[in-house]
Figure 1 (spheres, rainbow, N blue to C red):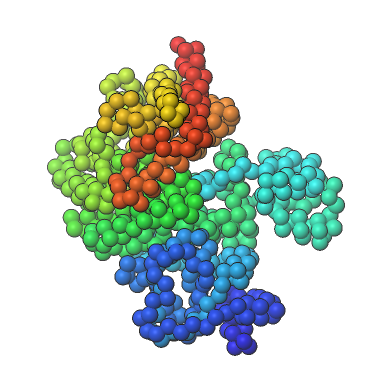
Figure 2 (tube, rainbow, N blue to C red):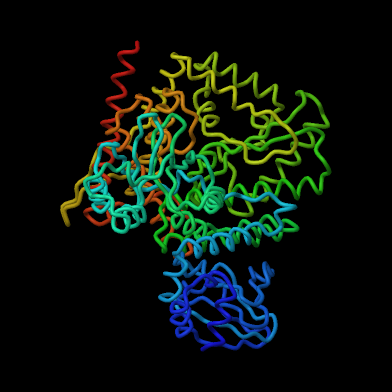
Length: 614
């Protein structure tokens, strides 16, 4: 055992352990030998209950036949699956005769939860996501707003340590914030309470300001998870408040929250897409998406996070397909940018979602060289996205249509025209898609025509029309009762899907439309539905209660939609949005009915504003 102790002592994340901890860890080690080319675990195996450290030899991490990394002496592997509870993202294979130490979960997890352990795991995962970063663009995880689930505990400076600790214990929080007189924030963590109260002797009735750290390091909701994780490691902090620019606190994230989010992100798929040398390799890489969605769902990742992850993969596909097409067509005659619109723009995507998109480029209409090039580029990218099961919008919101493939000046003229004359045909629908838009990828320094949308915030007539459009999406509130057994549920009353509920149009679309309107009325540039509702409540354009009502309904509809689609995938069916409500349990049917009625009540409250504004 002495040799094992000495080896562990030389390698992170165990190199700073005390002697007794090293000896205890060494006692749990099993020594395993793998002959050259032997498989240690397969890609997609069930979540691991062990991790391995290479003692001698070398181990390859392989993604669908492609070697992504080669690990040598002292390197740990298997920990992303163990920590996230997800199936393995890679295959591990001995590239030569290799000796490994196998360590069980119960021995390793407490050690990886320490600050040094978290740093090691974070940097090992992030460094692997950046393989090839010199030649490809890295997708930086998820916006941290998507990772905040619980409301923060915010205390006053006069609150006592005892009161603060009680509030933290009540909800199981590991940190609380203190709102300071200068508008800043202090932070109190569970380790502060241990070190400064239990050990340091600060009294339980002392002001919480005596144990807090101030000012707290904060980040905005739009920051990306892996960037924030690295910055937290560099600053040696373990909790970070997520704060809107206007000062509202969205929540608090811990380094463990960010680490688990990174292990659950399909970074292997993104990397495989980024490194694909041709469209066939892109297709093979994208084929892992549907199994990944099933795995994420089984691991109880929230629907909003899964939707955001699908959007990240879609972004990666678009980026790489543009790069490969440009390699074939030659350099574009001018800078260009690809815009994601609709649900992809909001990063609220499921596997049945159409891809709404547009192309903007420098130049003028009628320049034949530019138009032919951009048309060829758009056609090839859309065709390959379709092969990868991201179909274009059936209503023509795609850059293969002239309306959505324009030079910047033409885009600017069009946007100004519909803003100035919003009652022209389809103007409001067109603007709605653009309000959900963002730039996915650009070549050169192209201007963003979506900046023109900022002038909407001061157009009262246009805002009233947007409200009217939002209110036109009515959730179903009529019910049909069956006697044997007695059941009450909402259904499509006719057509091919008679007896089914269209959860997208009946449930999600009314909430999305309301969120879009209230964020515009509040003058806030946000994309996701939750961010829009929360910011509108902060800006006074929506009551806090109504924001919570819509958020809860949105979460319910998303869960039903994802549950339904994952079950279809398991059966080998194409995912859609039509749910048989009579197959739901009575409690869920009751929740759906109440959610429809709650959304309708919010619509009625906003409709009164429309009447008063006349």
